[in-house]
Length: 123
Image (cartoon, rainbow, N blue to C red; front, side, top):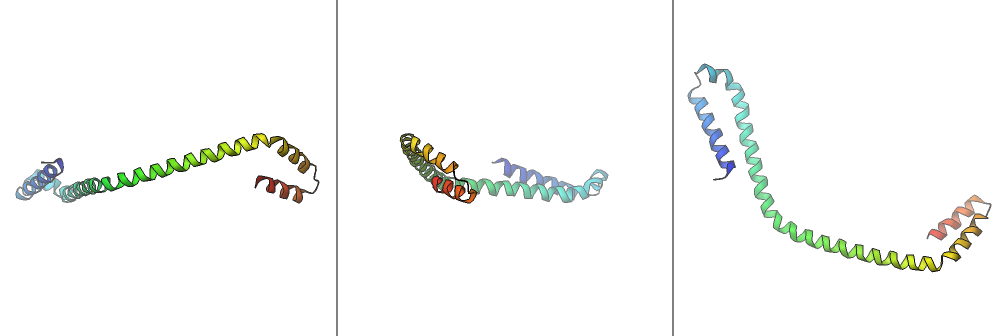
């Protein structure tokens, strides 16, 4: 038996005993609290049971989807790393030309034109 079933049985037994012995002064004192707490405990346990059942059935399909998503992300990262490496190698060879062009752009006095040229350099 699972703990959820044992919990439900225990709560049911407590509820039955409280109903049977409702004329007892102790039960009369706490009857109102039991009317709220017993159904709340049953609902919480049932929610936990449903979540556990749903998680176990979804877990298999999610693991396959997760593995596919991870491999896609890994491929994308590998591609991005290769592109960055190529751009870095190209930038090192053209660095002198870029610095020279940047110095020319800095000499432009019109701010709008200077920003336009810098934007064109960035791509």
